[in-house]
Length: 120
Image (cartoon, rainbow, N blue to C red; front, side, top):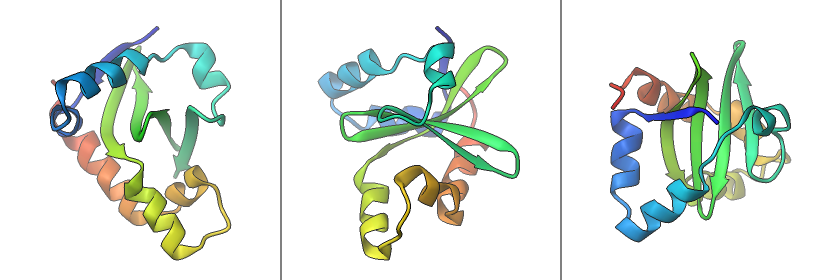
């Protein structure tokens, strides 16, 4: 299992939730090498842009977007599923969630903000 590091944006996003909900989500959020090797399933996904790999983990109604770097899982964003499910429904794209997000400039802007935020 990797060390999990939240940046100030992802920490604020998870802190905005109730204490019990935070504990439940963090209890579920476990990442191993095996999980990353078989990503593409229901809980784990992989998004790529310009050779950069971002991973997605689903827990309840939330999505953790993270990268693995220097033996750590660096969480860039923690977002409610409605953030992008509504987008997919309105745009009626014939793609899965991960494929649609990988091609969304708005999504990568959110990730870049998280990537550039101070780590806690």
